[in-house]
Image (cartoon, rainbow, N blue to C red; front, side, top):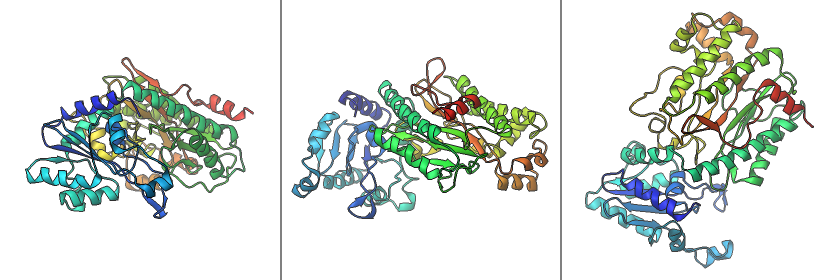
Amino acid sequence: MFSRNIYVARRQRLIKSVKDGILLFLGNSEAPSNYADNQYIFRQDSTWLYYFGIDQPDMAAVIDVESGQETIFGNDVDIDDIIWMGPQPLVASRAEEVGVAGTAPLSELEKVVKAALAKGRKVHFLPPYRYRNMMLLHSLLGIPFDRLKTEASVEFIKAVVEMRLVKEPCEIQQIDIACNLGYAMHMAATQIMKPGMLEQDIVGVMEGVVISGGYMVSFPTILSQNGETLHNHSHHQILTEGRLTVIDAGAEIASHYCSDFTRTLPSGGRFTQQQKEIYTIVSEANNLALGLARPGISYKDVHLAASRLMLQGLKNLGLVKGDVDEAVAAGAAGLFMPHGLGHNMGLDVHDMENLGENYVGYDDTVTRSSQLGLGSLRMARVLKPGNVVTDEPGIYFIPALIDKWKAEGTCKDFIAFDKLDAYRSFGGIRIEDDLLITENGARLLGSKRLPRTVEEVENAMSEE
């Protein structure tokens, strides 16, 4: 938790961005895993954390936009709770720590919301993603479940997005810490990986590093020798000489700020010549994006520049043909990189995606493409100082997608389909760093950069 002045200033700034009505904030509740008393690890809502900082379940808040009155709703513990949990701070004490004077039991929330509705006032709420909060909103507002997301307040969403997109110094400090922990978890994998190991064995070591030094992984770990499957969470294979292992993993620290790194390692410690050629293209694209990212350039343009570099590299290998600029415009890069270059990151590893990706990564100046790859770009906005984005180009050889494009004749003037047969069992390569946009460019987050080049990776894997 930051100082109370930070939360007070954030809330004061927020209400200036909304015309009238009340702002309704819902924290998260605990969720049972397999029975009521055995629960998943608690994760508080990120927008709640941003404005109120209280990392406890079953909390809500209302801010009256016109009067500025703030009320936090929550229940103090009773003796049964104390027996199992020990003494806990009063809700009023927690509220005072973040500069809120008004508190009330959670049961009073309905009365406040219904009173506002009775007066014809607007109740602004954000799109819900937890079922408990969906049920609560339905009960409070009478909105059908299938309309809760579409009837969320666009004015509220845009106000939150504009604030959270630009990270404050206190947030950047936390993200640097999360990235240092992410570095440690990835280096643990780099230094133990060898043929004969089970993928899950490496996942266990990596996640142990995070749990020892942080709160939890920032998303389910992706570690697979089938790297052509972009989000492969299966860890059942034995590491085999000659294959590549994609490791996409991140750490979430106690403050809930995140990291998100990807490295692709040769399972046996050395790249084959074919792997070196593709890996080097991706590595150069990753570094190009780092060099291009700066205030005033759209991340869509950075994506397109990275795509052009990769297509040129693939053309040099005979896998792409024709004019490279025309190939980029036609969307040929989508065959090899069917995802975007990166996304926003902060309190969420895909920051604010619950608020709507088009509100977070797009605005009135840039619209989403329909092309495969470019259309999946989660952050396309013009960059500003304080933005935190991932830089994660990749090249994948997905047999089913290759066959589909070949059969349909998609980008046939730019793809040398006959040459791709030699890559059908290649897998995929992705390299990802986390970037902070500064006043003059961008810098890597965290104290150290994970091994990136062929030589750096092989050297790191050979160290005892």
